[in-house]
Amino acid sequence: MAEKKAFVAGHPIAHSRSPKIHGHWLAKYGIEGSYRAIDVAPAEFAAFLASLGENGFRGGNVTIPHKEAAFAGVARRDHAADEIGAVNTLWFEDGVLWGGNTDGYGFAANLDDHAPGWAANGPAVVLGAGGASRAVIHALKERGIKDIRVVNRTLARAQELARHFGAAITAHGAGAVGELLADAGLLINTTSLGMHGDATLSADPAGLPDHAIVTDLVYVPLETPLLAAARTRGLKTVDGLGMLLHQAVPGFERWFGRKPEVTPELRRLIVADIEGQ
Ligand code: NAP
Image 1 (spheres, rainbow, N blue to C red):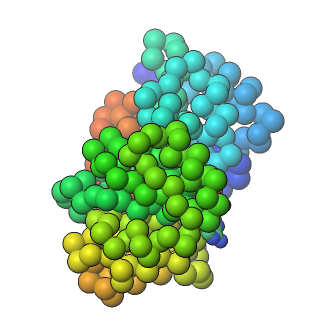
Image 2 (tube, rainbow, N blue to C red):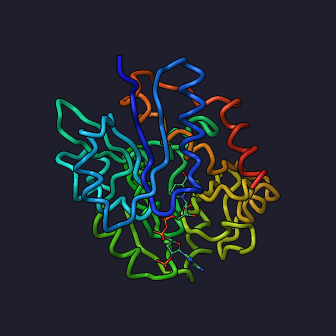
């Protein structure tokens, strides 16, 4: 049988850890397949999408800056992609190109893994109103959280998300954080702050109740200033690396026919990559 081929397309793409994740699983399960990074400039993305089938790809991932173009360019979309407004996973079904979004799945699966029962911990405070925030809100809604408070530097973007996602979501400016945390059970950072450990967040976990769980989508460094402050406060913390690992699972299963496992071994491989950079 021909080699099963998949890819991740972005611009730039050299930083992507997805080839390491999928490469690990291909080797572990002895699957004759490949997964490679392809740099696709925005002007070339439509042609790239149109040529996937003839180039023998079963599908792939798309990342910055192509998630919205992929959303517009596929023939069919799953429910998560429609709600989030972006596509990160492509696959063919009966010759038709589908687009899905697995970021919300990855977010929830990471918490399931490291903080089982987390979804009973509403209300949730979500810092940030960008693309990652949309995936998180989708997941929180799917898991039945009824009070989701979105806080953003630019209030208008939070308000847009509240309109889009409906009654469970309220929008707030940065000044409201302290008050919002007082009875929250979940605090989620989706802003790019803390990316290199060189910035602090205005949300202070000291103001959270004792049972609260704190998670950060930023995973470089693995322990962000927010997570460090939450740990010092004695709260349960979950880092963002597991989200990256889990979001890769549905794509691998579609392209290569086996549901892969997120194991400590895989995590160690990617942690070594982060620490070696
Ligand atoms: P995005 O669409 O560009 O949104 C960025 C968000 O950060 C916005 O809410 C923005 O606020 C806020 N922000 C940026 N700089 C700020 C500052 N100096 N002060 C206050 N707020 C600031 O980015 P994204 O795609 O949502 O990604 C956000 C982060 O999540 C990135 O670090 C990304 O790597 C990470 N992420 C991780 C995973 C994972 O698997 N763990 C998955 C997806 C994303 P404004 O609206 O006011 O500009």
